[in-house]
Length: 228
Ligand SMILES: C[S@@+](CC[C@H](N)C(=O)[O-])C[C@H]1O[C@@H](n2cnc3c(N)ncnc32)[C@H](O)[C@@H]1O
Image (cartoon, rainbow, N blue to C red):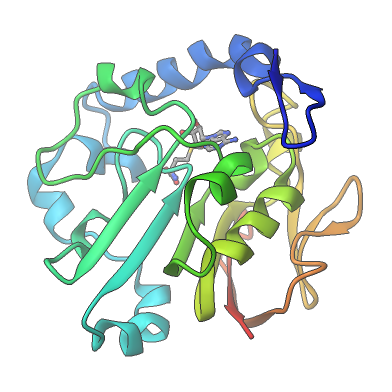
C-alpha cells in the first residue's frame, strides 16, 4: 500500500480497480480491429489528419498566438484526439492511468500516446498554472473521485485557461455500473453535476462556464469553463 503526503496509507488505483483493466483493454482492442466508430481515429492515418474538436477552437485561438502553448488530454485512451493540435509551438500531453497497458494497442503513427498519470495525481506531476487548456473526454466519470480530479485540473491550469469536459449523460446508469463506470454526470445551468451525490464538479474553484453544448441525441454534452 502507498502513503499519501500526510503519511496515511492509501490504496493505489491498481489495488482498488485492477479488475477493470481487462474490460478497458478489450474495448480498445475491438475498436482498433477495424470497426468504423467514433474511435476509428486510432488506426486511420487519413482520418486522424482532420481531427479537430471544433467546439474548443474559438476559445483557444488567443493562446495559439503565444510563443508556447500547452494542452492536456486527461484520460486520453490509447492516443490523444488532440494530436493534430501539436506543432513546434503547441505541446499536447495526453495522460491516462492505463498508458502502459495501451502500448499493446496499435495506433496511427500521427497520434500521440499518453504518459501514465492518474487524474488523482495530476497536481503531483505537473506544476501549478502550467497548461493553457485541459480537455477531458468521457473519462471523468471513470475516475474514483471526479470532484477531486477537477480540483487538480483547476490547479494546473493557468489563469484564463480553458477547461473542457466532454461526457456521456448518466454513463453509470447507461453502463449499469459496470467496470469503471461509476458516476452519473449531468449538465445543468450551474455546471456539471455528479447526480448521485449532487456534487457540482467545479464547486470550490473559480471556473466559470462559458459555453455548453447538448448533442442532439441528448446522450452526451460538452461544458467549457474558463479559470477566472
Ligand atoms: C472511455 S475512455 C475515454 C478515452 C478518450 N478520452 C475518448 O473520449 O475516447 C476513459 C479513459 O479514462 C481512463 N481513466 C480511468 N480512470 C482514470 C484515472 N483515474 N486517471 C486517468 N485516466 C483514467 C481509462 O484508462 C480510459 O482510457
